Length: 159
Image 1 (cartoon, rainbow, N blue to C red):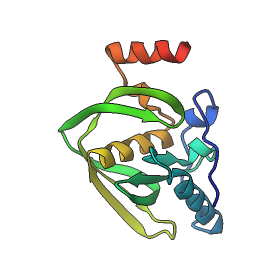
Image 2 (image 1 turned 60 degrees about the vertical axis):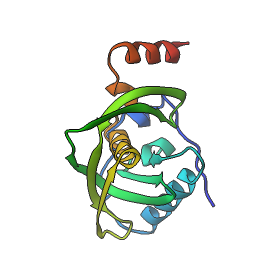
Image 3 (image 1 turned 90 degrees about the horizontal axis):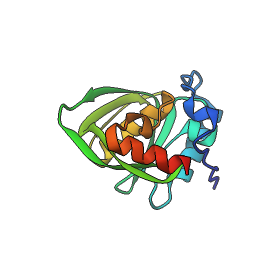
């Protein structure tokens, strides 16, 4: 079992858009295995490859007891209905803030073997999908904050 260390805010890999996966090979299989084993801990809902220092478009999830992954994902649908619950990030420990996300979304990409994969979710799964795709685009949840929530988080990060 390989649990990889999590990169934290300030590491440039977190702000760099990830490259598409081009080879569905044993190296990708090892990366997916590491992502799934690293996300398989209480309190972890998702983990993107950049969070373990790998600049590829892959993430794993752990929602409602289901662990999986998605390679080269894109969000293809988002509901107009939103949710505004607290969100946190393994790369920004101990910081949580109300973050607006679509209540329901669909992400499409591939599995580790290169077969098309579609994941649809509401609530926590939708939040996870959007959060992890943001990571692959070099964005963090704090970038989505506005108003007083943004000010509060920025103050906390400075202290």
